[in-house]
Image (cartoon, rainbow, N blue to C red):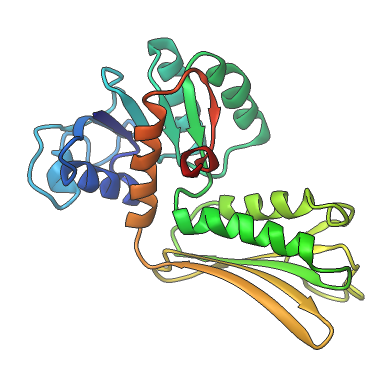
Length: 261
């Protein structure tokens, strides 16, 4: 399987390249990053701390491949999606922070022409957390307050994380949980906590790879569901599993739940 990595010079792009190089049935077809990036022209393999692969980091997206894997930035992702639609190349998107309009274009227009898989988090464990949190919200009676706490490294640009937003979305779909507001942090005299409110809190610091906790706090007890990633490789492996899945699919919009199923 020939893979092109878009956002190749970023932290996630490098890990995807390294795992492609270490996988017998995969080959790096291309490595792309933004115009003016200081690593343009460097060998993608050496940039990812593996042997040279003979594939330089380029501005031009190589769509002569089986799947494009994207870990870039929202505007760059949208341009990548449009280019993949033109060439008929399947696309895996791990970029977070897309606007509603950007997501809608990808889901309704791009995915009508090519297979697209988009997920806020490619980790198998996090996708299990989605299901566990939703199950807990259904099982617990009223009176349990819900808080979502996420932590990432100091370089992360969007907040809250896409994973936290997906957790909130799933929780709000549970009957009885969707009537309240979503409050991002608290400061000042905010008054008593409304019963149906979902609190969301973003922590940024150091080199935290990614942590997500869903807390259900009741009278006299609380339940916490937590996922902690200690390596970006869990996300890179998930992206490559998504690429394997997507290569044989018809045009449409897919998620990691489809891969795990």
